[in-house]
Length: 206
Image 1 (cartoon, one colour):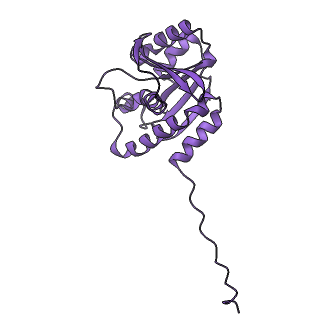
Image 2 (cartoon, helix red, strand yellow; image 1 turned 90 degrees about the horizontal axis):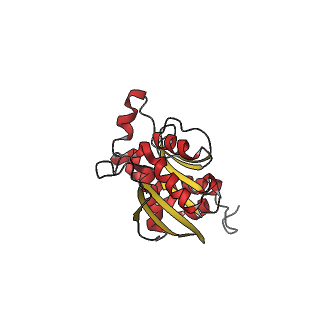
Image 3 (cartoon, rainbow, N blue to C red; image 1 turned 30 degrees about the vertical axis):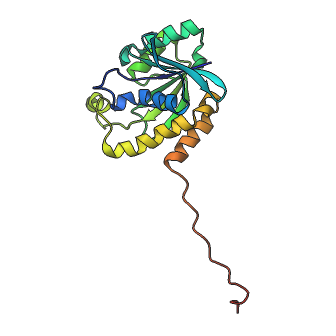
């Protein structure tokens, strides 16, 4: 069983913020795979269901970003899960907007949600890093992540979330590279090859 956690802040004022793209990702997966209804549990909203033949849990901590680890630890303790059973979806400043990368273990890179999860369970879990770009000045970072996606960004955001949901079965199966590649292709489909010169028909030759 896997625990899929989306990071974000609760409440309507934060709903469309870049910082809440983790919530958006697990909501897209929840809808695509028709999982069970969310219910209040473990300091968050929890849903259960099956993806690709495997049982999964989806959790959206409602503790605010800085205390995400409290909700994650409570759910993991109840279901007796290990860090390897955890997949966390979050915004990533160090990736260009619209890029997605899967990472196993590592540091938190200053992300307060990851920082708190690591403080509670350690670093050995999978992260789905969803790039929101960097404002270019560290003093503008908080304002950047706590602002809504722009109209231009919504074009790639919606395609990315759809691709994440459509290919969640690969992630559940442990095919991180396949999942990452499918999402990348959905955002940048390969261009059709230009047709080469047409060979002359026999009656046109000579």
